[in-house]
Length: 89
Image 1 (cartoon, rainbow, N blue to C red):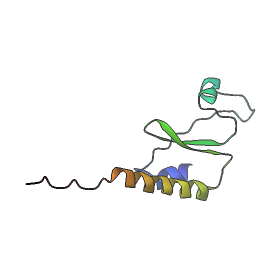
Image 2 (tube, rainbow, N blue to C red; image 1 turned 30 degrees about the horizontal axis):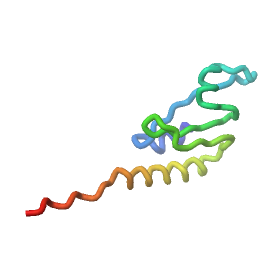
Image 3 (spheres, rainbow, N blue to C red; image 1 turned 180 degrees about the vertical axis):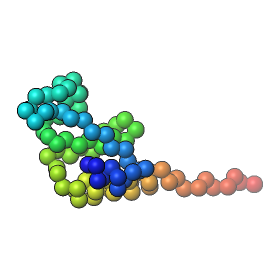
Image 4 (spheres, rainbow, N blue to C red; image 1 turned 90 degrees about the horizontal axis):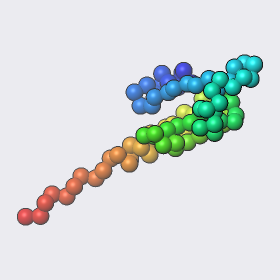
């Protein structure tokens, strides 16, 4: 995730949360329950506070990279609105 955080810096914010220790002790059961985390790793993509994608048990960067690029393309097309027609005279 550190590599992807550097690669997408300025376009996507990456935050990490350690759900379990290496001894399988749950660090924060509240967060684990709130975000429905059962598998490690679980990666959740939020857009304006709303979950828009979730990956479970994915460790290959290319999978994240493809999905993040698709997300960024879709977000760009949603924010680009056609210019308003000039007012009628």
